[in-house]
Length: 397
Image (cartoon, rainbow, N blue to C red; front, side):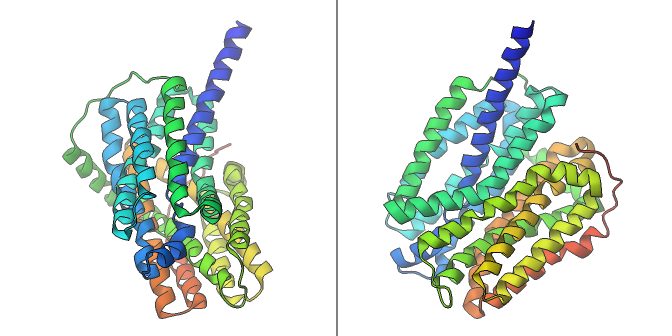
């Protein structure tokens, strides 16, 4: 009996580790071109606005993909959809590094983003169906940590590969990661056998529109769209900011500063304890206020140390906001929790699509201070919205 229990625990740890790795490596592709905007601008002899589409096209089709692969996984199975996405990514991703035309990079990034959307909504449903309730919090915690950590991991890994091997190698390396991950998932992730009645995409989209009748959900979605918009927007500007006067840092030094963001991400696993102590809405207001203030300070400061500290705190605030918003949407979604979560992911990455474009446009018509201040204002819109969200706190330990 003891041996059987130990075997189950070992299997659960393996599956949790695989899901965490998939979350980390798949979502990292959202951020791989964030440190490459200037590289693309120079290589293709184009503007930074045009180069920013290598990031925005991915995010746009990534968001659209969430609306498709949720219902498709009901019909064809969770593991099958995850495997399809990983195989497609393994084939498509290296092709991006083999083209010499920016238009093809943008187009292939869009297709890559669409297939990357196979994982997030499917993995959440897979976890709910494959794990007992008492283990579910831990598994979802690792999934969420993978998503959040990808925001820095993807940038640092892509930037490092680009610095030493060239930007083309970034996509070759990630393609290999996806193919290896495909084999691991195929061999070690247990197959799900539960299937659900497929009511059709039209009905699915209609059900999503009904969610906008609920004020609390609408307010949460308003805050959601600003999260990755400001996160990706900030990092799009940061590299250029630090590479010019008065800092004139090298690409390697900028890479180290991006890596410091990992420190801020440590707040994400602590979200449950903080929420239990202070409440969901209090943590929502705190995260929004902290990140908004840090964006302003980054634009105003001429001290590299203050910029590093405020960038870490900004990431910390954003990392805290992700699980808080997910918990609120899960609560407010009720029986339509899966639909509400899919719409959350869609809106989140619509914001990620707009982030680099808005940041680059602001830079072209203003300066760093104006850019960071406007991004701060966009994030701060969520602060008054949070006062109108009505919620009775629950325990999330």
